Amino acid sequence: MNDLRSDFPILKNNPDLIYLDSACTTLKPRPVIDAAIEYYERYGACANRSSHRKGRETTEKIDQIRERVAGFVGGDSEGTLWTKNATEAINTVISGFDYSKKNKVITTNMEHHAVLLPLMRLRDRGKIKLEVVENSHPDSNLEEEIRKKIDKETALIVLNNANNTTGKRQKVDEIGKMAHEFGAKLCVDGAQGVPHFKCDLKKENIDFIAFSAHKMLGPTGVGALVCRKEDLSGLRPLVVGGGNVKKVELNKIEWAADQSRFEAGTQNYSGIFGFGAAIEYLTKIGIQKIEEHEKDLRKKMVNCIQNAGAQVYGDESSASALVSFNFKGAKPHEVALMLDQQGIALRSGFFCAQIALEAIGAKEGAVRASAYLYNDQEDIKKFGEKLEKIGKLYS
Ligand code: PLP
Image (cartoon, rainbow, N blue to C red; front, side):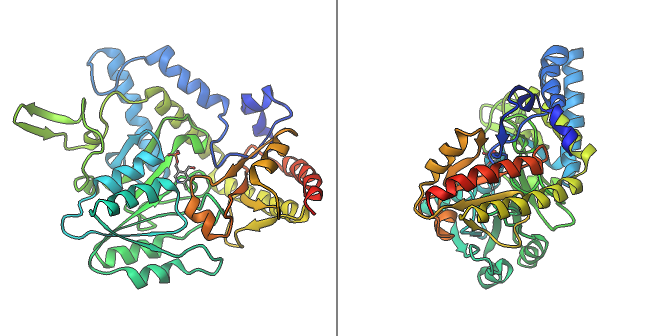
């Protein structure tokens, strides 16, 4: 995969940078940047609005990209809607779900704030009963934990298929099957899964999957929610305004029947163009190849971090090249800053998952290194060398 690096202008412009913060956001390859600019240079109009030529061309292109994004996770374009990011996609499901007949929601203690906060807010307003199951121990069996809590009152299960703290992957197909046995729906936070391994809405019994373009080489400010067309009808839009309706009278709103009901206002067309190019780029390489590359990187990352004397959070089932760690007695930000001074960019703190970090015993947060397809073994070797020196300060 080494020849990919030249596709990333930021790596060319910063030859000494070792970027290990891809779980936060990924770098963008040239085709993605070009596609985002292409919108402004060649298209420039709104989709699904004006009927002039540029408007029609923009609509056509956005529709094609919608199909590409849907197909990447085994969905259909009729069930795919643009959002600002994964957070908005998850909020669309959690806040828009119909809890009038049953209102129990199950989630885990290893979720990002994008999942936990909208759920906790609904719980605090008395709208849902929330069950938060344990999934922080290496030997936690999530399926069993959910089975203890699920019943006919369960409306929704919301969880990630790859954790942003430990990199742990979660097989969701059996959980989806279980949800359906009880007439509930499964919403997967795919922000850390979709960019790294094959996810499939239908094969994995998922009802809703949310993800962000920027974590998979695409631009910031655009994401997607993918589901079956039938499942959209049960959701209430999060934001309403221009483009949501079929007809409006002062006393009556007739909502659009398709996904445009959820896409209020002018969309991020340039971002969507870039999103399409990102999917094309990932597809050309092959998601399986990316997955294997990350597994190799992860092994080396774990070795380097442990050799430097730090504690690694996570276990064997963690497969993405995402590793959180701490040196005993060191403040995570201090370690990240020392690495930054040596050209290594990574994240420290709570990663918007404070409950998860506390559950794994990282009460003051952790340092997180996350690599992607543009990183190579040499990057990890250099990271290991710098880390070893830092480790000596705390030994
Ligand atoms: N879920 C997980 C597991 C994440 O790691 C993140 C971002 O870090 C999100 C959701 C939210 O993604 P975004 O900030 O792109 O909405």
